[in-house]
Image 1: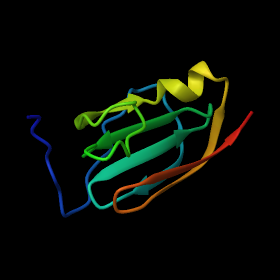
Image 2: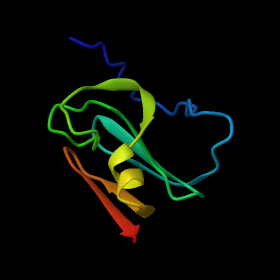
Image 3: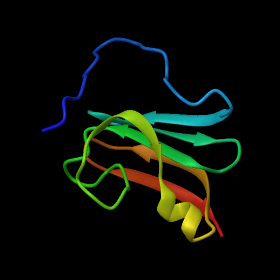
Length: 91
């Protein structure tokens, strides 16, 4: 089982240096960001698939949601709920 650090206080985002963030949303146990380039990165607790990586794995590291890239979709906006992630995309 993966260890996931849960922080109840503000923390710096640990993202690759070259990313410019347009939007951030936090669920109860996961976080998502949309970059200026239209990529979606998620991390945190993934038990219900809310990270969007096609599995139920959890991750402390931000990971790009590859399915959007593969389908040629650009993320515009993200909203995280308690166990969900909603993304508005452009085709």
